[in-house]
Length: 297
Image 1 (cartoon, rainbow, N blue to C red):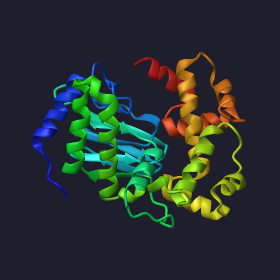
Image 2: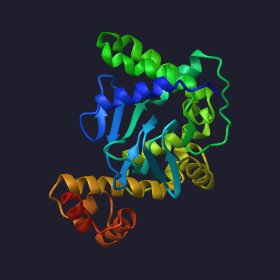
Image 3: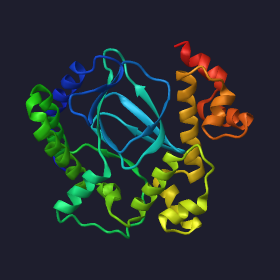
Image 4: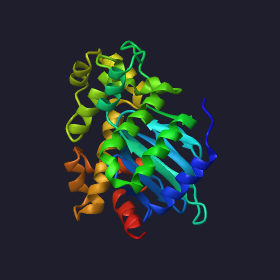
C-alpha cells in the first residue's frame, strides 16, 4: 500500500472547504465530481446510492445497507458498485471541524473500458460479493484525486484531463483491495446479471414483482437469484423494491400536497394501512407525523 502524502490531504480539505457554498452535496464544474459538507451531526438520510467512490477527509459518516453498517472517516474511502438504497448519517461533525468529503460517480462502461484497455485479470465466474466496501485510502488513489480536483482552477483543461484522471482513479481502485467488487461490467458475471435485475426493479418499482421474470432476466433459478441478490445488496429483491417505493413515497410527500393514501397507490401499494406500517418501520414515524417533523426543520 502506497504512503499517504499528508500535504495532499490538507490541500484536499482546503479545496472542499472553499468549494462548498452550502450544507449537503455541492456540484462542481466537473460533472461526475461532488463535494459534501455537513457542519453538524445529521438525521438519517434515505437515498439510492449511485455507483460512486466517496473519500472522507474530515468527520465521520455511517451508512446502513439492509442490516449492515459501514463506518468511514478520514483516510477512508467507500465504493458502491451498483445502485443501492441506503441510509446515511454523519455522526461526527462540528462547525469548526465539519464533515468534508468528495464523491466521484461512475458507470459500468467506464469500468469495462479499463478492463478492456488493460490486461487486468478478470473472471466471469467469480462469486457475487457485497456491492459496497470501505477501504483505507492509498497514496496512489489520493495522488490521482488531487490532480482531478486541481482542474477546478483550470476550467479549460477539464474536458480533456478530467476523464483521464477519473480513469486513473478507477484503475487504482480496481487494483486495490476489494477491487474485484467493481468488476460488475464483465458480461455474464454474476454481479453483472444481478445489476441487470436491479435496473429492472428500479424501472418498475411501482409494479407487482414477479420473481420468476427477474430470475429469467438473470438466467438463474429463483433460489439462485435470491441468494446472489442478497450477496450483492444485503437484501432480497422484495426488500429492495420496498426501499425504493418508500423512498419515492417520502419524496412525493415532501414535494407535493398529495395525501398518504394517494402516494401509497402511486408507488405501488394496494393497502394504505400496509404502506403506513412499512413507512413507519423504515423511517421511524407514520407518514403524516414524519412529514410534519421534516417540514418543521
